[in-house]
Image (cartoon, rainbow, N blue to C red; front, top):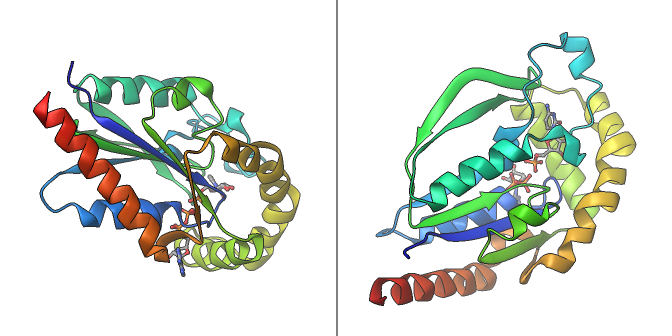
Length: 210
Ligand SMILES: Nc1ncnc2c1ncn2[C@@H]1O[C@H](COP(=O)(O)OP(=O)(O)O)[C@@H](O)[C@H]1O
Ligand SMILES: Nc1ccn([C@@H]2O[C@H](COP(=O)(O)O)[C@@H](O)[C@H]2O)c(=O)n1
């Protein structure tokens, strides 16, 4: 039976997962690809006061609504559409909007903990870990969180040292062993992007001949 190709792209925060995923996406002009970000599936916390949401550990598997994420991914694999939740980083909760997404022949699933859950891993055809040094990741994160996610320098540093770093070591780094491909230094690794693109094109061509 026809089935979309599912590519998982993981790595630590700021490693370049989104940049790698977009670089792959940009390589395909004639095939439309769906990018499904795990971050959109952070649990809804609208019932909690804002001050309480600040205390959540966003780098622990419990922070995600993984059942909903799997449910939506399975629908896309069955070529059914989904209403994807939308996440607001400044408010630390889901927004009341959803985005209607149509299924595609290629799905890129991207996020810090996508290889942590065995059920998710089993849905992926290719698993990629973007491996970037911790110092580079924290520098990128400071810049991004201050420019795009409404954070202060002190809050980014405090969150990194108290939560992001230990959770990375406990939950994210160990998932490297599940990866088929480990890409050093994120989005600028053109050789890795080209290899991935060639592999995806070859699977697509095989699928068309079936
Ligand atoms: N190879 C790279 N060189 C320089 N900056 C990069 C590179 N890859 C990503 N970035 C920047 O670092 C930040 C985090 O990258 P992103 O792809 O969003 O990482 P992730 O999705 O893993 O958190 C972004 O602002 C992005 O523009
Ligand atoms: N309310 C939130 C939700 C998540 N985060 C942080 O986002 C990181 C994951 O996103 P990347 O794009 O960096 O992979 C994760 O490390 C969480 O700490 C947050 O700060 N606030």
